[in-house]
Length: 133
Image 1 (cartoon, rainbow, N blue to C red):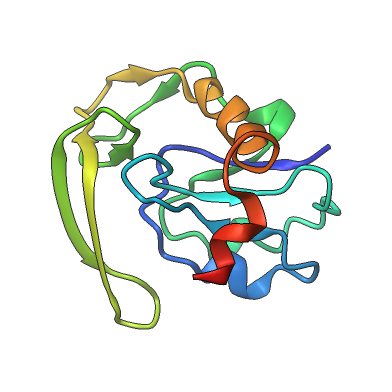
Image 2: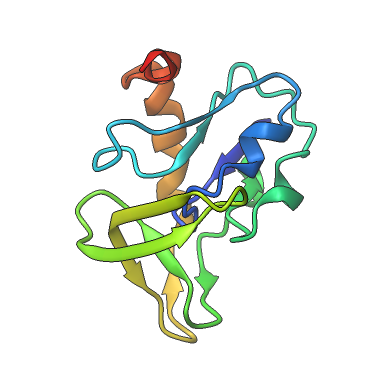
């Protein structure tokens, strides 16, 4: 079973650096693929990526919450959203996203909607070819 990066991802990138099989890649173009994505066919289910994510956005596929209850202040990033986020990744490099929305405390969000996009990124989207840029 693979791990899934959900829309709680704000592109920190630490997950990709610790992956022993290098199956985590940043989505490109960013407006269409705003997250980092895990190749489900290459993932070895080691879980090394999970503690590296400061946004707690990574789950085993069978544990992605269908009813994630927001603590308040988290952001989700999905194509079609128009909120603006500026922050830094774990190296201090700027991260800018224009596909976000803040979650209110107690708001319930279905994060299982993000499962298919992890598969689609590699099966229908740019996949590893996005690393060539």
